[in-house]
Image (cartoon, rainbow, N blue to C red; front, side, top):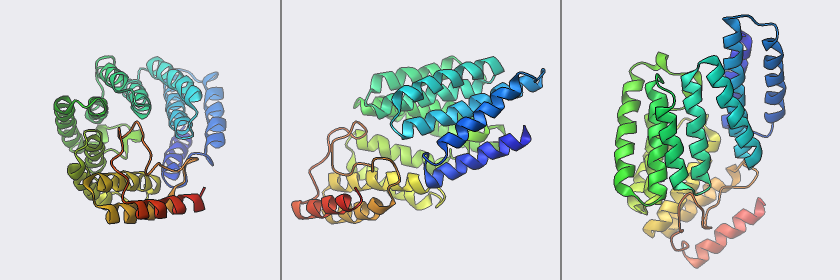
Length: 290
């Protein structure tokens, strides 16, 4: 069990760099191994086996969502949440609901994102401060997506307070929260600002967050660079928008490269394209990697 715990942690780190496709089959087989152990495990080891199965399922959710496999992601959400409840793990139970809120946000459904984030908070008492902060910031993103700046700011401030307190006792946080901290939260403030069309605030938050984001989060850096390009276009700084976007293009590892000019539910309506000439340069670069 110790070895399987370490292996899962290594796979999480690997996914940050190489993406989900090379790991999905490996994780599914690894989960089968964990489930096979359950038949012969006795209490209290049985609780640990089920908890580890829940963690694997939660990671498979993320990979399915990353690859655009919505139905598979929803099925893994339900399985992970059920196993978390069986194992008596409130942190994972709440995390699965927060991730489901993330999925709603990704699909442009702000109201559902808020409801699921709130469910993550009230349905699993006893969660860590970091897990509570994750749920609060998901509610903030849902409100921002709906254009509700006041509620978005209120939840962001609450989430930041929880993050700061969680940082004082990192040993109390579950292992899958390794990425969660001030840098990540700064980037989320930038995302919320994009929703609210506060382009300058988005540029400021995303620039600060990207500068502090570790190089190991290679794919995250690519995604947030595309967001920064979008923010620069909103401000009207076309040349800077093009520079940032062109830097991101060759690093795209997702099955479908992050969008740079189109309308997306993540950002609402796009600002004006960053100059026709620069727009053509970006489209040409995207086609080279299509």
